Length: 213
Image 1 (cartoon, helix red, strand yellow):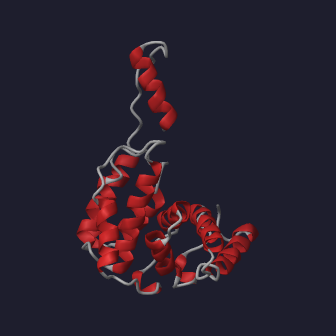
Image 2 (cartoon, one colour):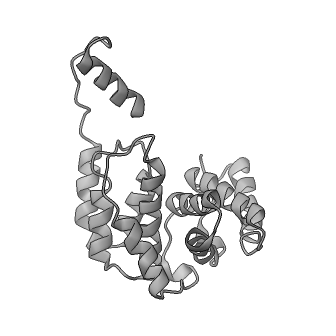
């Protein structure tokens, strides 16, 4: 969504109000706020430096919520909100629980993105974002390597493209190489595959892949 429009300004104000709902202990309230933040982030109309405690609270909900969908929505919001300077947000507690949270999500086997594992990719990207803001347990070089690895095979219009690019940009020299490689890959023309009849075995596979893109 274009910034500077009346609608974008209205949605930005809505984000400021939603930030006041995240501390609410009622999971229906803060869960709904997480869901809304994911969509605001996807449209680029609200950034977490407007309410510095937002990232800390989203990480807390993603780690600690006992309601599966609420934890998912918090991770989704983390994976969609624009990346800002680390010093612009509140500090994230980085005890052993946080380290375990990041390592668990990054230790899952990598699979190409699809309908069945979409939320797994959301969780991975959320862990990278959390590690970026917390400055632990990964170095900037490790974050860049993970961001590039999890972009492998994912169409550029799909999951986390803006956030991955912003993450690498904010890493500075540590992310410069990976960022350039992703940009080069994004600019390559798509490979044209021969048309296959859907009734054939190869045709069914090609049709299924096309539906997932």
